[in-house]
Image 1 (tube, one colour):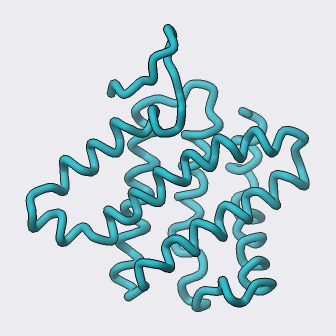
Image 2: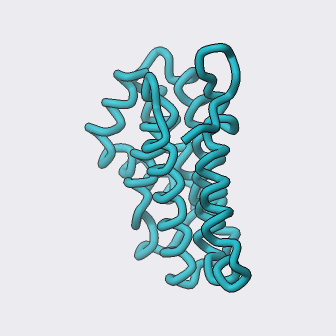
Image 3: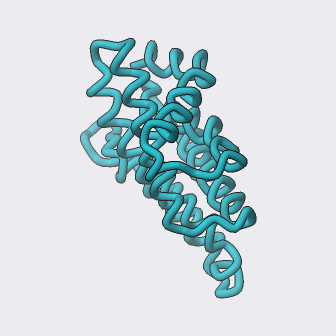
Length: 168
């Protein structure tokens, strides 16, 4: 998986080109041109780090959640409808799948791991999108921390002894 992670890091621009091509080929999934990539490259790199690193740790878990939160907040500030976050992550997943499938024999194994990380990133983006309400209710720090702490378990990562790790 390290080779795939490195490949994504080295060719993130090509993954984003794939993402752009999907929005042209499937116009019903298209987003406005000015909002097509934004912070998606950093989210994609964080996905790769959490999903494909041999031994990701708390720093990578936090990186993924923070990237998702920032992305969701940016989309809120741009006036996106919340539902478009789901479309955007679907497009990102499809772009990663198409890119990896064309280059790696074990792309399916990588995508299973990336799917788990996409679930976390989507949740984080929703938190970022609704940050104002969460801050107003005093829940903001706790919900973000809970998502970071829950990341290993939700991705299915286990530590020695077979117990899902939620330690930071």
